[in-house]
Structure formats: C-alpha cells, structure tokens
Image (cartoon, rainbow, N blue to C red; front, top):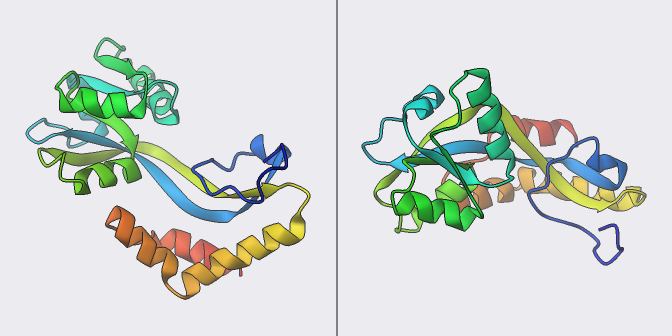
Length: 186
C-alpha cells in the first residue's frame, strides 16, 4: 500500500491506531475471533481447560500473544505450550498429536472443519475478551476512495451479500453487532 502499487487491500489486518498513521482504514467489515481446536474427547470446554492439555499456535501470531498473556496472568507457566513455525505446521502438529489443542482464528478453524480432513476435531472456546477487528485498507490521503469503499461495504450488508459470503465460507452468519455497525455508519 505504501509503495503505491495497490489501490485497496482486502486482508486480515487489524485496524490499529498505529497502522492508521500510515494507511487509511474503512469501516470495520469483519471481526475475527481467536478460538481453540482440539481432538474430540479432549476436555476443552472453557479456556481455563487449556492449562491441563498440550497447546500450540503459530509463532508470532496475535493469538499466540493473547494465549501467553492469559496463561501468564493465570500463572499457568508455559511448559505445556509449543510454538509452530507456521499456521500449517500448527494444524499438522495437532493432526499428528504433538499437541492436544491449538489456537487459531475462527475462520481458519471453520475452513479446516468443513474440509473433511479434520472430522475427528471440534471447535472449542474463544480466547476471552479479544476481537480482532479489520477493515479494508487504502492510501491514507485518498479520502474519496475510502468513502466509496465504506459505501461499498454498507451495500454489501444491505443486499445480504456480506452475510451470504460469510455463511458460504465460514458456516455462520455475520455477527448482528457487525451488521448493525455498518448500518449505523451509512
């Protein structure tokens, strides 16, 4: 974006104030949740249950950081934790039994569960008190373009397309809070 080779970025970039100093964000259009995935039969009914199982996540991810903050606040220690080099390695580690549970985004987990390759696994609890809010990104000084993108997002809600795509790809409707937020910003 900063190199002027892109007009818009559609990605999973959190809309932080620090980032907003160099790029322009639209209204939020998506909220990622960080969630636990575990093998069926492994007791992970709440986030607290992770202290009793082997846990993993991709190295350097926000959900790894959030797990550490939570575990450290609870004084669990980190002996039951494994960092994986990548998201794919984390899922492979879970699949191979190197960990009992992993933390990833709810979208990654939904995709894996619908793939047919993770039929022996189940989505578990979310990381407490954390939502990763994202928006489209454009050049910071292109205010007319950002306004157009905002209107585009509002229309995606109005005609049901945002919800349709969310159900298609993740198996659940868009959260009512996100829909209301975009409607309020019209």
